[in-house]
Amino acid sequence: MRTLLYVSLIILRLIAVLQPGYIHPDELFQGGQELFFGCPNDISHLEFLQDDPQSAPFTSSSSTKQIKRYNHEGALYVNIIATWEFQKANAVRSSVPPSFMTVLPLWIYCKLRQWCSGAWKSWTLSGWEILTIPRLFMALLSIVAVDFLLYFIVRKRETWISNNNQIKKGVPIELLIFASSWTTVCFLTRPFSNSLETFCISLLCAVSVIDMEGKRLRYQSFLVPLLTGIVCSVGLFVRFTFVIFALPVVLAILLTRFEINNATMYAKIKSVLSCILLIAIPFLVTSSFFVCQDVNFYSSQSDNGPDLYSTSTKTMKLNNDFRKYVAPWNASRYNSKMENLAEHGLHPRITHIVVNLPMLFGPVAIYFYVSMLKTIGGGKDSKQSRMDNMLRGMIVFGLAMLSSAPHQEPRFLLPLVIPLILLHARDLYESESFGNVFMVIWIIFNMLLMVFFGGLHQGAVLSSVMSLPDILHKSSMSDGIVIYYNTYMPPTFLLRRHSLNLLTAPQNNQAVSPQTCPSFIVFDAQSSRENVLELLSKRFSCRGEEYQSSVYLVAPKGLCNELSDEFRCRELWSSFQISTENLPPVKTIQDFVENSVLSVNIIELVSTVCKSNITT
Image (cartoon, rainbow, N blue to C red; front, top):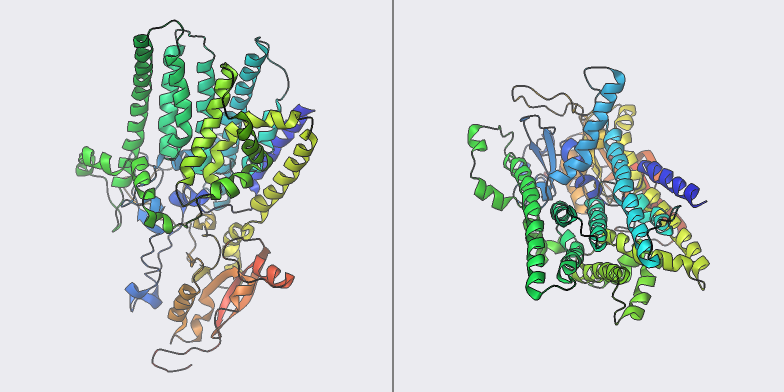
């Protein structure tokens, strides 16, 4: 029964890659799809802004910027739409994780299609494929990096408790709880950096279990530090917050060296220092690889257009570039400044503890708080208790450190799914007093959030972007501006009907232009009504009615006609979604529905008042 249920949950996880829900823009703008395959969004060159291009409200946006690149030694990406994190001046994220989560699976996908078709030339990619293939890759990776390792850890813990080496058959309850969690289905199937961080935490916990086995085989003395150093380096360059979750695990590994039976203090200290050295060497080697890739990535960017690779670029001052492009260091510096965090939103420091952890893990998080009151004071000195203390340390230290920063998003706590499941899933399930109640609450809780975040939350944004070419074609317009207002940032790579061919590299340093992008431009006006009105006034003012149909607005239905008396909206497309951001006042069910339906509209001019007071 458990095996059948687990297989069903795995199938659900794979199907979840097709979910329309838009959890957070970072999935697409930090995961690599928009970075490597986005369409240009610079509107400063448009005709109606040429009179005063510097006055355009969006020409110098700090959020995204187009960076053209030339091919060099087989580089796969030739046109980059860089969010602020990936811009040369900031360099707060490594280019390797998004390449791994997006470019690698798409390259493998192209290779497989080429092999299956028997053609020498690969097919090109559509925006839908760029969206779903990385998700499928992350879903499969979650099975390998978390499910398999959870099974390994749980079975090892069972042998510690039963004092024998027999491994039980069947699917452990920890694996079922993990597979049925909405965070697994919705987050770990998407190219979030937090998902990759969770995979690294899972691997590090498995390494610690190998170390706690206590069987000091000849290879184990080198294997555990080697894997620890590599995993810690990879996790650190995925997200600099990885060190917070990893520190208790590394300390537990060092502690096993210090607690050698019948050894002198000198021997214990020597063992610890030797382990630190063995961890440091692979850590530094792996980190050097990441830094070299980032130096190559960032130093090739040019703010003024293409930047050809040349001999002078190859012989750059590496010491200076290495200092500038160490992503974890830049990220920690950036996040240490309050004014930087304020741009992303400030939250009460108890948000993680009171809101985010319960929202992610529901009854398991609540049980953790209750159990902490019971376990204060320590426990027996055994492998099981050491493992439990390490897991509790990960949760407590992670919560404490992340809560010290005023910018707190739920996904920051995603790696805590590993210690929480290992600590409390079995206790809750086997509880005689509320085990059945827990399962009912767990199922309802996860089903509701799975439907909400996986399907309804900003659920019309992605489908609207993919529908834009057909919508504009049916309205006999193929160019112009599409403004997204009061929605999440629209990912422009979804506009591609056929994207770049990853198996056909440009020759002789010739730039590859994004010919597969449509001729219209998609722009994100965020939630600023003033930005929308300023852009519309520049588009229509003193231009005559022949320009009326070249501006489209994608916004909640209830907001479109409230922009201004000078403009009205004619609906072309609509779809239901739910947004919890920037909600307007809702007094009735009709208000809720109107503000939940996302619509694509043609902006029509009612009356234009020119700057010279000439009316049309």
